[in-house]
Length: 427
Image 1 (cartoon, one colour):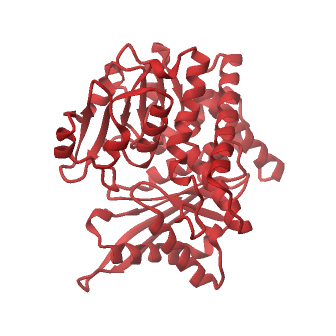
Image 2: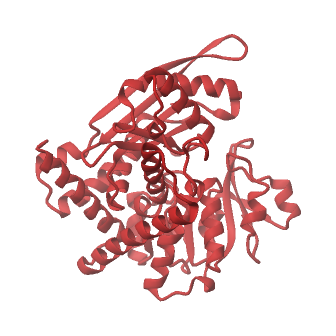
């Protein structure tokens, strides 16, 4: 990520542009363009060698007018408070646009779990929740997994919260293992949700999915399940890009005859690193990391980190590209958006396209709180319905008012939150 790039500035600019468009009242605007609460803290952890290391942790609760705050905890060595602020803000709009009764939050720990043992990771998770326990809860703020955090981390956090609180509160966190309060379908939810919205976009554009090709950036949880669901629709993936944590650089894995998502997932680490040697044995050509963006395909699916499609590289997108489905949070900068608008590329904005994860997290929260769990088929059906309805509402407004899809999604999301804030009498 470029040192000059500030995701929070991007999030605020996107908000300001729409606030201007809908003529949001000054007080509501001032209230919504910044977080309601922020927590910054240090987490001392005794390492396996006996030394104590001090890690920095964050939790930002952007807005909870529509319900308990909701958002992941990401582990990343380059985590910044501005990234967390931006992600918390995007979570508010994400929950709002799919119309689930939750607000937006995000958390983070500045660390690299690759370099921590399992016991050290456990101590870090328990240390994080000890700092936050008074300000978390099933009806207050409900964390979830995010970049480089997983179901095991969530279980440790839940266990520590229950130890502190003296009760059983499985609804305090989502993304837990199935059988320990987790929901079926949660693993697939974000990636599947991206493709549910893509399916609807292609239908509107009059394009048959089985005639399309795609390139995907990122092959972690979101990228893998998006790839699998897209292939179920009959589409062909020709390129997948991922970050290599050993080399500290990205690579693109290319196969002109089509990627086998299942086989590729089989040679991918839990952190989304694809094994280069095994990939070559399977017939993949290894290209530079940026090559995914330049492929002559119909669909691009950025499913890695923010700030990936920029003013500097948007011009490299092939003229063949018709749709971009944003699986990642904030992958496109405002400068790149201008290029995409001019090119009339149909963009399914991040906080709509990738809302499948938080929607299924909401389902998990509901199931945990009532201690009754649904079957997987029912969950994926509910997810498809929620994502499809949200997409249709946004695309309908976009057509009616001649708006860019991102702006239409923001108009719906911001209006809903603003209305909740006003009705509560906060401003």
